Image (cartoon, rainbow, N blue to C red; front, side, top):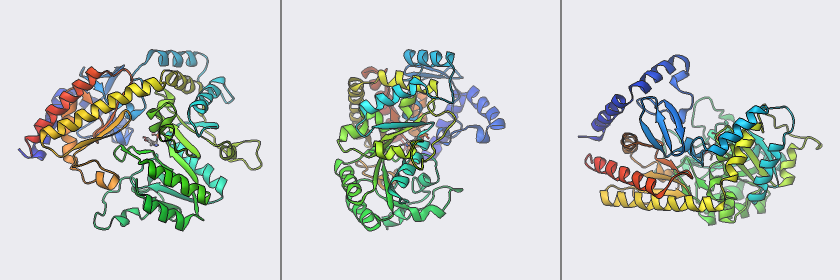
Length: 449
Ligand SMILES: Cc1ncc(COP(=O)(O)O)c(C=O)c1O
């Protein structure tokens, strides 16, 4: 059977197993544009409707149970409905979730970030990682009095116009890879007028970074980079690459911004502490909200002071729910249960899972591997580990789609693109179960090739 035929078979099995989810999606289509409200969560034939989650497990409306290996796209470091976080949220709700004034919980969470994360002197909260990267780049523009932003090809930093450039274009050029670096919006509706302010470089490519930044430094306010390319395939940065960016930013008066929205989970002090290459500002999100909407930026006091309301010409950074009590309390309860020993334990599980996935690929005879950054992984149906986004795009997406449905069938909820995010309640046993399911799924795929 060909892969396209088999996909129809496994899709039918999915539909037979999830009739109530199917009906729920039909109803949702009446009131939600497209039947859902978050592009990344959609997959064909329809996404599951989830009834509840506890710890490592979620249950759909048909009663199927899954180990959750996405954890809301990396944001639930302690899995679902962690008791201390739940209590913190209830307690906050009882005292009023939001006020247009200061609350102590904001200072507590900011202090914790400042104590742990090397670049952080001061913090501003917002409501999403998207806002965090927006405000970080804005602070850099004001501070440097320049406008240009350097980003990475395949780097995802949220959904502002600027950040929707060269993330995952519909087509890429393998013959002349330089064409992939011409700044272009990926999606309709994003302004192409800001192309002149954008510079795009490939991940882990010191030479191109040096050339682009050296040539354009008069215009460049900031370089924004994730210390591992997350949505672009969980590809760790080479230390040399981050150091090159650091040195160039020092030399030319540009601001180095790390997007630690996903990377903070890599160590108590984020990826920057792990690498020992410290940015000027970092953007945060995901785990620091304990499962509630959140974003934050933190960094050098002098740069962050562009937002200081008592300054000469302060930059406004408003948001009705910035630093609301529920999010602050949930975030604090989360981080207080996520210390270095917890990061280390999760890292060990991550290493174990990567080794197991690599071994399963080798045994199956299919070209493939897992890439890993701490407790985040991505499997790829390609030969050898990718070093940048262009290499990731060479993968056969139809195999990913089959793997996704095969894993759901076996009770493992993963991202269709192969992203895996571990959580602290996971054990070696659960990693072992995932591995068996993965190996069995590969065996099915091997039979199709
Ligand atoms: C690295 C990175 N930056 C920014 C964002 C945007 O965060 P949010 O979805 O909270 O706007 C994400 C979201 O996945 C992300 O992974």
